[in-house]
Length: 312
Image 1 (cartoon, rainbow, N blue to C red):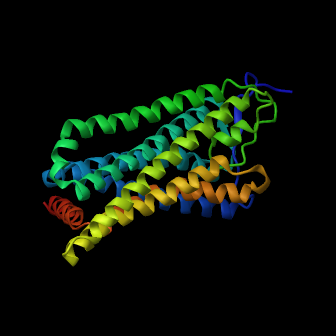
Image 2 (tube, rainbow, N blue to C red):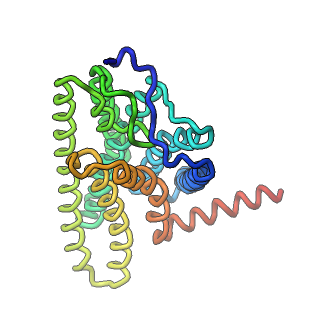
């Protein structure tokens, strides 16, 4: 029987034992990863370089893109390396770092998505108070609170999880170190304390989701009262993508951490993990920029400058 002090590495899930399919998995993940890097990098650069986008909404979007870059970089490169080199191993310290960074970033993302819902609520329902409620200092404080909440949450969970004795082997049935699957390796009753923390955290996430939904109920009621069809279209185009992102991300993340063991299986776990780890970072830039004329103009301007500089 081993404990956490004798575990020096963990074994991650391999998608397949066939070498050709392993390489296919590597190239597939590489394509998704590069697409996420490019899309989020363009969003960050466009917002940072265009002074017309220095508003609260785009400031929070820039932070969201930074979080998405970090979250996908925490899980995907190691999975690609394992497929490329036909290995399953990740060091104990590497696994702990992966758990910490991933919890840090997804908690910060949930907090930031809640703040973005509040931003849209104030912009549409209380436009006269927008400058007061969402001034530059208030925006910085809210963004810092989102990052700080993620850091503290990740620190508590990671320290508590990796202090538990592990005696159920070192095989993690996932392509990255996911917290619930690490807890499965524990043989101590003290793991119930960590499970209790996860349930409490899920309640907080559910509270954030309820706040977001109620905000959008108020937003949609206000939008329907707008006499101009163009005004209603613009408001819906800004709000519906955000609501879609929140629903997809929160539902899959909560399901991954709270699903009952009776319906748990390696295939289902992997599918859910792919949805909430790969899909949001890749699609968020497209969802937020696809129907946003200001951002699309800034991106076209940025690309034109890059082409012009390349020619010179």
